[in-house]
Image 1 (spheres, rainbow, N blue to C red):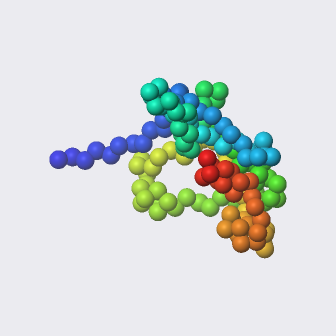
Image 2: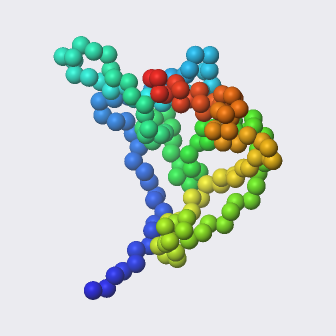
Length: 152
């Protein structure tokens, strides 16, 4: 039996559109109209006589009818403004290692994302991770986003 190697192809399209029986909405935490948290309102049967059930929506922009998806450009950098305010420096990206791809190499590698992504790094002593910010008592936009999402 011959095992043929399969070359990973870059996708040229992605499934988009509404999810039947529900609609995507965004809400903002009180006083933070700049933070938009996605939710999915799921319609219940009319006999339930209940409001739609609201759940956190993990579908990303793919189910938002107002968004145009461009696979070559990548996803919109939702956190870019939040991160920019922290003053991180742009640094050189580390070279991808074989282990990063599960040991795959050559024609078995998935093509790299064509969108440019800056790699940023903190200065010595600068808070970088959400854990570091939390330990220092600093509430970040990411924390506000998650708190709003988790409390529905």
